[in-house]
Image (cartoon, rainbow, N blue to C red; front, top):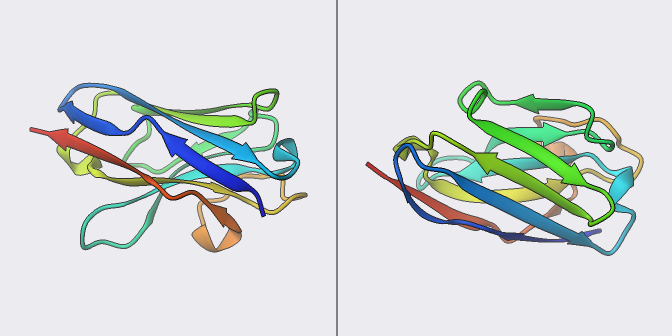
Length: 126
C-alpha cells in the first residue's frame, strides 16, 4: 500500500475557497489513479473527484463539477483538490485515495481504491 497524508482543510465561509493536498509515499505514485472522497456527518462516504495516472483525465461528481478541480504532480507525489465557491453542503471529512499500482484510470467507486488517508475536515459556514 501507499501512505497518504491529507492537509489543507479548515473553516471557510460560503463562497470561499480551500485547497486540499495529499502527499503520497511508499510506492510508485505515478502508476496509480487517485481520487478524493468525502463523508459528511451521518452520511455515507461519497465520491468527489478522480484523476488518471498522468493527470490527463479527470472526472467529477455532479455536485462539485465546475467548482472543484483535481490535479496531480507526479514529480512531487502529490494530488490536490482546489475547491471554489464552497457551500455549506460541502462540509465533510475529505479523504485522498489511491488505486492499486497498474490501475491507471480513475474511478468513482470507493471499492476500487486500496489505500486511504486519514482525512481532513472541511467546514463551510453559511
